[in-house]
Length: 507
Ligand code: GLN
View 1 (cartoon, rainbow, N blue to C red):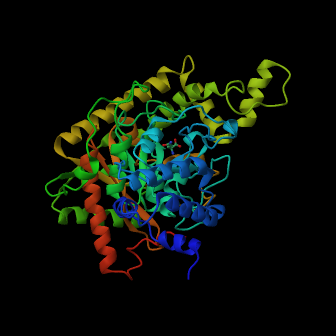
View 2: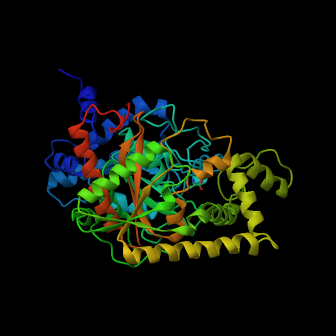
View 3: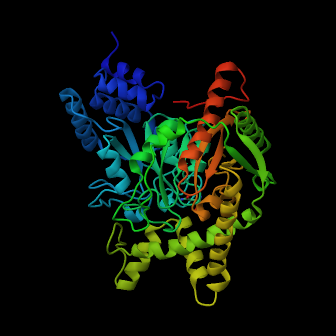
């Protein structure tokens, strides 16, 4: 007779879809509380080696799961995410639970409220298991900038999971949560999702409330989901999207049933392929997989055409000016007085400020505060910040023109598959270039989805980025579903073709 623990962990051997879990929970085959406990057991076994969770919210999770079980027992209606175990990137605040943004300066900080996206997940019945590791203040592309140590990629623990939402992507890949929330300012949902072989969503700017998100660059920051499949990611987006009186930039546009949208198929959709995303710097193995993905879209009935986005080459410098400028303003609030860490080694007020910031912030965060302060300073503002804003406008207009002719644009999500831990950490510029395909959509405010699209010969996942115009998430999901369906077929028909099928999580 297998022990209760083995039974529980057997249940989690393969990631389950929302639909399968919902059926089990509603039919009372599985209790939401037991499901949460089995995830905690798995976390206990695996988290030590991958460093994905920073904090667990066990009491809160079990109480929520028991509420779901009671409702099910009574036959009361339950929300669309009833009993689904989720994890939250640590830049989103959670009431009474440590919320550090991956920074020493916020060590021990327990906010008095929940981020809107978190409260909406819970209102839909989701069970919040805990808080996920990330680059400090979401600044990075590898998760190596966390004050709490790097996250390891579950597909290959010698490699980074991507960043900054590395913990959110790795949690889904290692099945330490069914879905997670991350944030994306310049690629931080899409790039790690691509590196870990999961689905990640960049919602349109304003689609999801930023209330309770510890700000990095407010005009770029977005909150979005990760899941193991497109439909589940779409379901989470419908739950967290929509206007919020606490965020003046949140949109009043109606929220679609994105999962139902994604069911509509991609037949007849016009797809643009921008040549600028296939030039120098793109790993040939990544290119090959994306080309296979594009061929699959043609088979699915999409009309594929080349398009031009000539301002793409200005995106990295524009992004790193706008993002750092906004970061330097946003991070001024961490002064050792109002939140978190205060240096014990100061006698005067100004020493207290500077020592707290010097000891509390990591090297990358300080680099960005200095770059941003410089770009905003008198005499340099016009040459850097203002110019970057103009480039941003040009990029946005260029995308809008492209979307007059095509419904979606597909590109690689990142120029390479996951790189080794330490490989780029000494070279900030090389790290910034990892975002070359993602910062454009960030600057333009448009939406996108990254979906697994084959693997390198070594079995490392490759992601395809599907971009759509403002508030057209439904279209991006339809295209992503078609790519996903082709992968499933491919894996079914050629199980032993190592160059095509991703290795999958080793855990
Ligand atoms: N990697 C990019 C950066 O370091 C993007 C980060 C993000 O999207 N939060 O700024």
